[in-house]
Amino acid sequence: MKKVNIWAWIIFALGMIYFFLPLVATLDFSLRAEKDVYPSFEAFRVVFGDPEFYSNFGSSLLWSLLTIVVSLLLIVPTTYWVHYRLPEWRPFVEFITLTPFVVPAVVLTFGLIRLYCCDPLPLISSPLLLVIGYVILSFPYMFRAVDTGLRAIDVRTLTEAAQSLGAGWWTILFQVIFPNLRVALLSGVFLTFAIVMGEFTFASLLNWPAFGPYMEYLGATRAYEPAALALISFALSWGSVGIIQYLGRGVTGGEQLAGAR
Amino acid sequence: MAFLELVNVSKAFDQVEAVQSFDLQVKRGELVSFLGPSGCGKTTTLRMIAGFELPTSGTIRINGDDVTHKPPQKRNAGMVFQAYALFPNMTVGDNIGFGLKVAKKPAAEIKKRVEEMLALIHLQGMGNRYPYQLSGGQQQRIALARALAFSPQVLLLDEPLSALDAKIRVQLRQEIRSIQQKLGITTIYVTHDQEEALSLSDRVVVMNNGRIEQAGTPFEIYNFPTTQFVAQFVGTLNTLSAQVRDGASGKLVVDRQEIQSAHSMGGAHSGESVSISIRPERISLLSEGQKANVMECTVENITFLGSIVRIQVRTGENAFYADTFNNPFLELPKLAEKTKITFSKEAVLVLRHSVVSGG
Image (cartoon, rainbow over all chains, first blue to last red):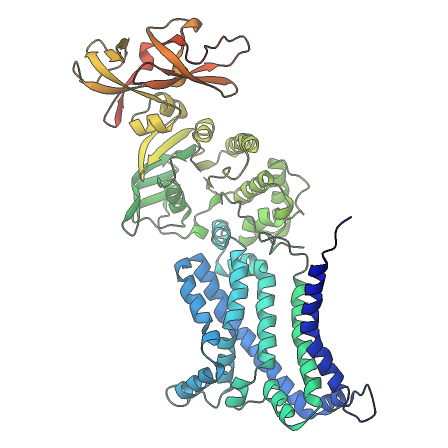
């Protein structure tokens, strides 16, 4: 009979407690909005009944969609080209994509404000500046996701094989390369989505409506509703991860990453 | 007229000359192998024909058309890669039909052609499978079918069997040759495996340091190497040091034993030190019948290679191999035993500088 390693289970249980205890405590707190009523969903009712919630959530949804589009257009062809033609540039590109980890969001935002406040590119009053900031913020996640996907396939040989069969760049990218990056692209998209939905600094300092500042505002003015919002935000992130897992199901081994099912 | 022509083609990467002054004419329907060690420029030459590399100088023509600056998409050259390069997201059928789909052929025509190709490579009924569901040998056959499906003018194969195990390799190379002859397609085959090149090709181009060392039929390359590199690279070659005793009559001395060569000494005079070469299969044990040259030697090692038994002998300074066909009744000498070997005068080639005299 297989021996059960008790220590493995103890460590696993400790890990679970570490992750879930704060969530359980938050849930417990959010259910105490009404005196002498437990569980009370009053905090959730208030949140979902607030028109500001929908307007801010909708704005963040729009920002995240725009960010995903711009990020895909920028990162995917760049990473593909780096893999196909300029592999020696990869460390440099990787370094650039690490910018959001090195430069704090506050510094980055003020940098953007100073640069784009006036001529020749006065973008300060345009939401484009916010999307540019979010695209920079998504760099490490989108680049890594696409890079990992491209590493799992022989980009150069597949491209050359398609070329020898008469395919042009459009066919190569949309029929050969991208279908094989399905899981990688979805990972990048949902990670970007989750990050933008919860982002606070850029939206707050550039003064655009978004879900992040709304959560912060609610946290400063209400007691139980922020806990409810935090759980909603968690559900959103988990939902994104769940979709990635669902769409990437059955993926086995590097070579079959793209494999059709 | 040559169907595929490379005229004075060179390719340099930074300061490194990968291919230098490469001239070759390939007839329609001919299979020509590029054979050489790693880094000799054979794959670079193939990639220039395919259009993946632009020559630094020179001209490439296919069927009289100058394709030197044409992109790969416009060359109508099918290519088979070492790593198969099947599209993982497509079924076998979609892979084979890809070139036709790109050319916007009608769906019915594509389907018919895919079935023909599957029959050609003996994989009928596998059109709906995905590449990861196939073995390496099957994947490479699909890659071959894909490269042939759109009826290319030229077929280019870049070490297509290197990733396969020995038995499949032999089987598949025969299949490739048979399909190539059946379709009569002009083919360039890159390999570093001499057995593969010699068994498959109409002609073999032996390359070294970006240059053609020798181009000829497999028979010519093996039996009449024109440079020392070819002589040593193709097949196993014994190289012995000898002194010329009488250049005019072809007499030489190897470890104080006189032997004779039927070939010219290239003007070497008496007493001069030269290198001579003898193929192992041209040396036999004296017990198997005497030839013009007989030498006494000591047996150092015996290696069983299946159909051949390789006996390593020493005559003094020189150690070399003698190959004999395996047979169950063969009486092999013992290790460290004194024995006698024999070979013909024609088997002795005199090597001077990098050029072989005679053959």
